Length: 453
Ligand code: UDX
Image 1 (tube, rainbow, N blue to C red):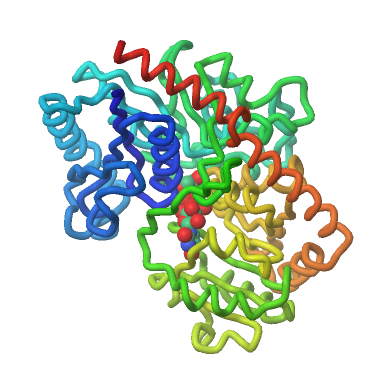
Image 2: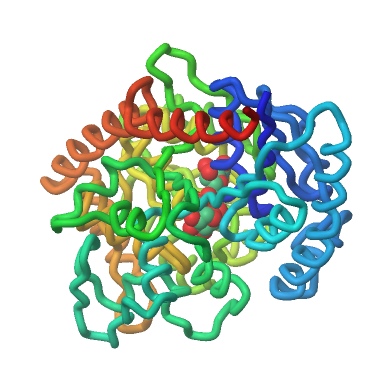
């Protein structure tokens, strides 16, 4: 039986979709081992569904990324220590009865590809971001596409017209997070026959009003295939939802679900900025006042490490309509009918999860791929709106209140809900037997199985 090694970047937003992909491969009869850092494996099971979990060292076995002096220092150690540890792991498995057939590496772990090549293991790239974002990075890297100066709208083939602030932040080459920016821009270095898998689905990125599509642009350069949305809990056609097995933080499950269950349908604004983003104090204050002033119920995830950025006393007393939690079971929350809108940073997983559950989005993108995802949410799919920053550089409370009202009660909200409903159906169809992503996955599984013949 073919045995696939899956190597995600070690963070929630990368492990979740690649774990779901791993589960999908096991349901197609492949043997799969997901490899992550020793620090992370301490907080997850050694087997999730039929996927085995194995660990390598990143040099920070006790404290993970947060115990490193900076992200850049961590990334350096992850590559140096991780490469050595990964090579040893592959060699160990290859002497066992279950040798690896190939490796699927996250494009944010490019050294995984180098290790695979050094031991003669076929390798396949997996992008946890959208086809549009990946196409932009690739075209910028190849100097086929220039990011426009502020105030100029760029017309692009296969993509919506965009201004500078709507481009993914690493394409701006502004010098911040140089290692991550290099990963983003150098993602696909291979040749035309190389497989590149995307956590997206064809129908999602074919709605661009243009003659060609982001996925088609990528197909010019690679054997690109969209196999998503890799969203746990998305019910399969046969009625068997997949099990969700991995949360790196402890969700306040009972608090969230009890609170939501007492609320009327479509009455709650769910607020989350994912696992990484850090919001400035002033913005947190405006958001807190905006949510309170909206008069709507709100469930707001503020991670424990971020609670100090909330206005004094707000965590304990967010008003009678509010509930603050440190981490939520997000998929269960989005699936709950009390939720009427998702105020989100537009991380790609959160975006796909909102799409998969048909939840309208209020976009407050922060960095990396999020501004581009927000552009698609508002202008391409029509499943949400973007809150606009004022001249001071942050989004004011009045703007937040106006957007919440527009999306929950306004005429536009009605259109948005209809679009969200249609897109949800289309997401479900894509992963259903015979749907576009299911067909692409079958093609990939056949490719892997052929390696063992
Ligand atoms: C990061 C980047 O920001 C994102 O843009 C990129 O595409 C992937 O990596 P992150 O910022 O964490 O990820 O955001 P997102 O992609 O939305 O992933 C967050 C994940 O955490 C989601 O799967 C979400 O369901 C989960 N989550 C979030 C919870 O389970 N509970 C919470 O309270 C908040």
